[in-house]
Amino acid sequence: MSYLEWMLRVLKNSVELAGLPQEVYDYLSKPDRVLMVKIPVRMDDGRLVIFEGYRVQHNNALGPYKGGIRYHPEVTLDTDIALALGMTLKNSLAGIPYGGGKGAVKCDPKKMSMRELEQLSRGYARAIAPIIGPEIDIPAPDVNTNPQIMAWMVDEYSKLKGYNVPGVFTAKPPELWGNPVRIYSTGFGTVVAAKAAAERWLGGFEGKVVSVHGFGNVAQYAAYWASKYGAKVVAVSDTSGTVYDPNGLDVELAMKVKNETGKVINYPRGEKISDPDASLYVDADILMPSAIENVITEANANKVKAKLIVEGANGPTTPEAEKILYSRKDFIAAVPDILANAGGVIMSYLEWVENLQWYFWDEEETRNRLASIMEKNFMRAAERWERLRDERKDRLVTMRDAAFVLAVERVYKAMKLRGWL
Ligand code: NAD
Image (tube, rainbow, N blue to C red):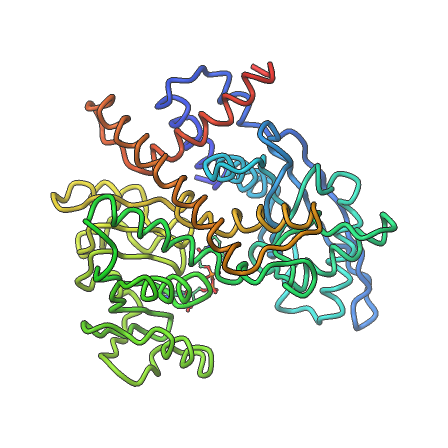
């Protein structure tokens, strides 16, 4: 099944579970607009290479289109459409005034020089400029794109306009209209969701045992904020292996070791386990899979001991694995990625609000605003889940199902009020 087919199936199920008319599915199964562009770049060796790029605007019932730009050799228009649909739902669930969009350029940035990457990024920004803007469509980074690329793009767009337009791209460097919270916003948001879940279902977050799969951007800050909020982080892992200490890891030391040596396994204390997946199986109240997709599957779900899973990564738990987890008596919930890792896009929203007004919040105030939005989203999803479970005793209703139902309902209500349906 392609990613687009899979997303359409998720949409169909959500529309049905929410009891909404078929026309909601018909409307949302197609994007509003697709732009395909060519980007000619003179490479360092003198060749002219024509790159292909897309910008998909999926739905803007709730606000301007919003979604990242991906640089990858295997991107296709279909994948981009699926990702844009995913953004419509993610932004809807996040309770922010955004629709969904996504962009992509078929390229291998790992094989390109900085100059080539800059030319490509400026070329892409020029090519999509006619259909983007701070009130229309606001791109951001995604796989293989970063704040530097956003800085080039915002510069190029501003040159075209003849004045500075900071609000047209988000996740810019803090020195160029960005916000310092952005670097840790996703990991921090995942912990806000985990804390809210633990307070609702485990009697509190402080002292709870937490394990984190991964130790990249999301995972490091998830581990950092979990320990900052008083949980005991006992395991983290990267491709080099897992470090485990039942008495609790010194997360800041682990971050220092990872960033200096590239491998978390060089952490000097605790137990070192060569299996990177060992962090999935240790004794813990809360597991935050925050590395890559498809790590908890049918094959290993019965080895997971945590009562609560909070997904920092995209798609770490497969649907089959989820069924196995929910069949366990002491399992509470898998707080889904669409809810738990929305900290990044919510931070983008806050940055955009700052940019539109040429106004700045300090780091702590930004963080508090982000936490408050994440907490409200978690509560709404938890309440909707509890209601749905009561209504549908005939089938398993997961927290993921409830999150998608909420997401579709909010877009539906906006479209209905606007007279589109
Ligand atoms: P990253 O590249 O910074 O980190 C990925 C980490 O996973 C690395 O430490 C790597 O060593 C580790 N890893 C890879 N394979 C592993 C394995 N088999 N076992 C254990 N560890 C493994 O990426 P990131 O930005 O932290 O993103 C992580 C996940 O979160 C991805 O699924 C991404 O799509 C998702 N996500 C990220 C953001 C964001 O703002 N960065 C936002 C939303 C979702």
